[in-house]
Image (cartoon, rainbow, N blue to C red; front, side):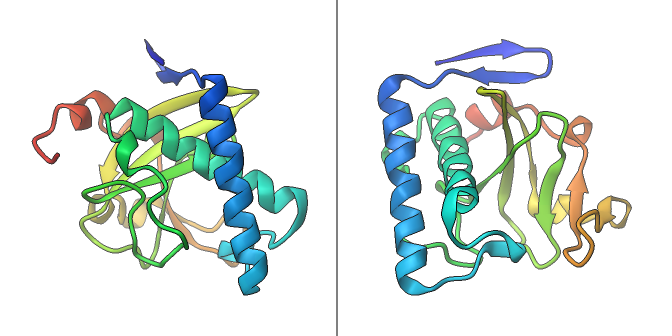
Length: 171
């Protein structure tokens, strides 16, 4: 369930949603550990921090899938592949852990992707907006706050409203 707010769309998880997110996060963590995969962008590989990142990602994907009526396509990828999308036709959900964070677009992101910003903080989930990956790749937004992991950080004010995506003819 979701409600509109001036700072984005508030998404409310049902108990079933929470269980689905937890099980997907555990599945992703187990898969990565079995394959010995490194954490993305220098992130944690194992333990509670790594599991938290998987929960964050799975929760953001579920919220966007629900809002866009794409639940039937949720969690289709069994392993993270560089350049792949979370939801059809080209949606990549970028979930961050603070409501004031920007949308991240990697320097080598594939053009043509629809990047959607979701933030989850203090058990509140906000769907902020979207932008095409090639439009996010502007020099003015290129930063390296973590030192050694430069990317484009698109301010929330530059994003298009998610309601536009819901009504787009792309589905």
